[in-house]
Image 1: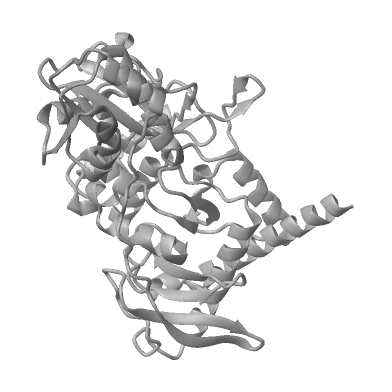
Image 2: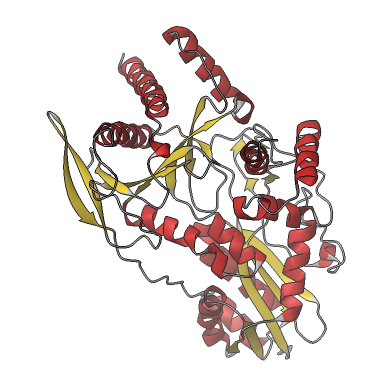
Amino acid sequence: MQKSRRSESGAGLRKRLYDAAFEYKRGKLWKKLWDSELFSVRLSDGKIGYVCVMGKAGTLNAVALYVGDEGIGSLRKMASSDEVSRMCDRQELMLSQDCLMCSFETMDMLRDSERKELRAYCQENGVALRGKNACPHFERYRPCCIPWTMAGERDQRHLLEALEACMDVVERLKTETPESLGILSTPDFTGDVPLLERTDGGYAWGRTTLPSPHPVTYPEGKIAGATAKRVLRRKKRGGEWSVDIFVAPEAVSDEAQGDELVTEPVEAPYFPLMMFATDMRTGELMGYTMARREEYVERFSEYFGQLLVDVGRPDRLVVCNERAERFCRGIAGQVNVKVEGRDLIPELEEAIAGLYGSAGASGYDDYGDYGDFDDVPVGHGDFVVYDGGHDGFGDNGTDQGFGDMIAMLSDPAMIQAVPDDLLQELHDMAEMTGAFPPVVVANVKRELNARGL
């Protein structure tokens, strides 16, 4: 009976979430606030959530809740994505969101299970879906993951509380302005914002200061003592290796059922971190591996230590970003190798650009003209590459240059520069092939709508 009661409680929470979403849509708060005009809400577990309302610019119609320091910090990262030039770094920043989002989409943008759930809700509650982008879509954004169906009760409750607070803002704006309520533009996401705290009679309004940015720190790599001794006993290879750690261009899933990888995972597909090591004199790829972000230090350390045992250590490791430098310095100190930081390593940049341009669904073993990867020591395990559809994984037919185009079309700012005729062709191609990721399909459709095409 306890399991049944929990299930009923979950279903009741989900219904309230849909109720609140439709009420929010009727309130049209996005017509009153810009996405830089934040306010906050004290959540029932004591945390503070920061609310960002999107839609006034005429593109994405959504409300996002960024919970705590981590949430608001991810929003700052997103805002700084224009400050980086490397495609892999830009992708990592664009994938850094840590938030709960309720957006309004067309029915075809929902996954099968979401469409079924929404239709059942509408039938049971007499709700008619009218107008464009009429369907509430609840998603959990996690750093370096595909936005995925929001299933956790805590996340749903947090988003519900944010939507309810939004309705109090709607009511206040019937007689006041955002400025008089203290809802001011904060493009750098610093300063004070309104804080709504629920009371018996509604909400008490106060102020809170947005958390200060936290400095980013990266851990050092460390290989096992026995492995370090084996490396030191082996003859030195010499030369210089360039080493980089960066986010992979495609999302994967390693979720398994028994001995088989599942094609419709419960957990969100993720973008693993990759490590490249290349010989700077010959251009030879010495090795590559990948791992989940939370496991990369241990996994990369183990792999790199074995690589040094197998092929010998160089004289110097050359890096061009702080994460790779911190990782390499820890290991270099163990095996008597120097580390040098440089602003740019052209050979490495070329290899990464090739990876982003040609990565397919073959397990990252076919990288076009950037060397024969079949003979390179590989350190990753089994996974399935996300194919960009709503419900499946598998071969997505990616070819040379496709990754570059997808990266561009995933950025709403970049897609605004696409000419009308090409934008229409992209829309038709997406409809016919189903080869584009959901974020690209959504961006193309929104830009077409914004242009009245």
